[in-house]
Length: 172
Image (cartoon, rainbow, N blue to C red; front, side):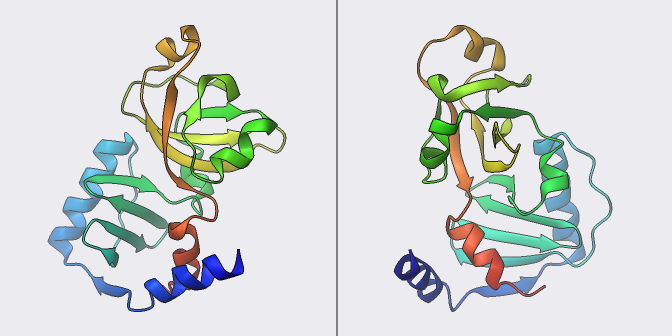
């Protein structure tokens, strides 16, 4: 584990960060509001922290998000924000797999809220209601209730992944 963290740190020590313009900030916040179906407060001074061409950590006052290609997800450090999203609860047996990046499959799910295919979904563990990951629904909640197999949520960001570790290094 320690060696993995060192590798993550070494590969992103040259993390390029920049404050984005007001116009770009407005565009990014509009995309986030539209994608997340949540009204965000006005946020000034958004920063982009470029991991590579396709991955950016976005930080601002009261907001940390991850942009992967064209999809923007809330960061797991933003608990108050995560509470506003649809969620899936998983049993104790699914936790270690989800925390290693596995997609959420039907057998591990104990409870789910209402969502549509393509929605951003938070994955929560059943004993302490802790957020484990954030992903994208691969089917609606109605379909998930009646299916017996298959991927319900594509896992894109989970506890201790590179986005989690890199966020610890970012000084706002």
